[in-house]
Length: 161
Image (tube, rainbow, N blue to C red):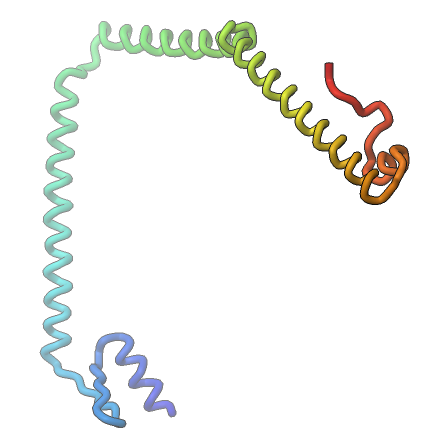
């Protein structure tokens, strides 16, 4: 049983080949196959190294190109400070605008539309509740108070005005 396990692990690691012929399993390994696999892996790794070197060189060129217009001068530093101040002011103004968003006419109009839709939904569900109550009353001959108590319907349940 241990030989079978060792052979299976070697097959799983692609160090030994296995072929089923009839009812027998035949195992074999060629030294040139392992050499070929290592050479193939070496070529892949060398290709990755060369691609990484090319990418590094192109990034270094891009960094040098970007540094050309970015010499640290007084004018540039003052412009950067001004840019930072403007960004902070923009975020502050956006926060203030968000604070007053509820007073925006478009938002108010949208709220009114959603309120109308909500009122229609409430009326529809109230109709459904009354329809269920009337069906229950006809089907089971219960009185309203017993139906309200069974389904947890409040006594002041009615349509919205």
